[in-house]
Length: 166
Image (cartoon, rainbow, N blue to C red; front, side, top):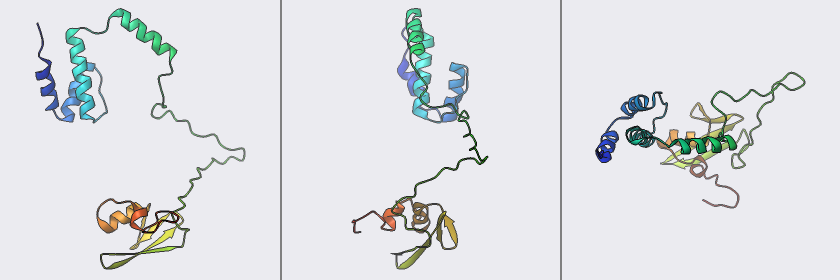
């Protein structure tokens, strides 16, 4: 009997993500952490079709196993498997040195900008930016606090690089 997959697929697309996760666990026998609705719909539809019409042939399974043994499939380390860096000879753990952006002035500098009739003053600190008594991690965070919406902090404060006039 020919199965109407269009109705099945339409029913899946109407489900909420939480319902799709439950359906995924039902057809695969294991839970999933993803919240990507499109991916869930595709995987569930594929699995339902494979269960209804038959899975891969034994020959195809053997070939897939051969290919998997010959290739390094994992491109990233599994979660939680990143080892901690070894201690240096003097017993201290190495610190990560972050290169600061050349567009950000040195600590102690006060950035000023006129915005909607107000003059904004932002002080550059060694680890952040001080604006209106609060410390922010980035220029974009300060710009968001000022404007109420996300915008590029470098553009907002006109720190766009060498030779560029705003």
